[in-house]
Image (tube, rainbow, N blue to C red):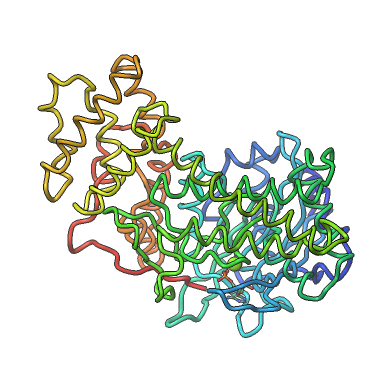
Length: 497
Ligand code: AMP
Ligand code: MG
């Protein structure tokens, strides 16, 4: 097969020292079939969707064919899983094929997830089941459409082979695209081995690839730490602003690129409750919705620790520098969240009163089991003028005690009056930050069930189309905007690995 037109690789990671990875090809599968191709993403990467959906493309996505220029490898990393140190994890079922330069000039990793065992597989089979693969495709696309940094999904192929979990499931491979797959755990892998040379090479790689402006700083490695802290604080704020719960924020699942990565038991919340946990394995609620900002800081502290030898020759000095940046995380996070929340309320932010209004609303929502997404979207439709308060039903009825909303709404309107924007402008701005459609658990479960158990992809495709335009209400999509009925509520989500 001639594949000159498929990918133009420039593999910066494969040029790193040998102890960074294990080079090996993906393991071929019985019968590759293309289920999903992300054509827009393909074009953004300068790839031809027609070629990708042809024989060579599908064989590549399945791991049955290694295209010209690819240098397949499994990355080494370590990590803290639920707070427990694991000195070696690594890509146990993912193979990085290589990096392509997108139309934006950035390098993008092309990785096959579910591509067979690697030296890092431990007891695992190196494979992925169709359900979790489709789940990652759906939710990562939804995140992207919501404007939240995330790894992307280029393609899904089925393998024609079963994977054995509690029961046999159809196997699949996801082609994942990311600015980088370097994790906090990648740095930890080398720090634990006291391999300062590798740490420096890794830090330089990440600077070149993700934080080039750090190169100009007096201390580039301190600037790297600042850059990663800045991105993570914004990322986690953006999660909370759409009610996203990652579910397994282990340090090996935190990317230094600031992209959301490793969609496992993640979920969006319906009724607002900061203590919400969906992941079946998160028994202590370590990764609950409301704990995510604090866990972000915990993970970043682990990252900072790994950089200490690079920050200064004097360990005390290095520690003081790192501490200062880590201490800045809380302010950065709070600022990003407060600004975002103010925007969701149609307020300019920056005033203590705006922050207090947002905080009060969240408290009332939690006390009254108000649906997160509908409350904010509903507010976008309300008039700021007091004589129109009768319209408030659409929002106040979301609260167990609707009167709880009324006095808050009065203060909100007083806040809006100070903005000087007319209703239409303010509503239009609010509708750009308050989605109508999110990947609600019951919708996702139903779509995955159809694909996995009935071989019917149509519900997934329809849901994907809805989620790709989350801010624009369209006729006939009402059921996608609604919380589950009692019998549809999803209590727990699973890693599915
Ligand atoms: P995750 O829970 O997906 O973040 O994965 C944690 C670790 O387990 C990583 O090192 C993965 O590569 C590895 N892993 C997860 N699933 C499998 C699998 N089916 N086979 C081999 N390794 C796996
Ligand atoms: Mg992971």
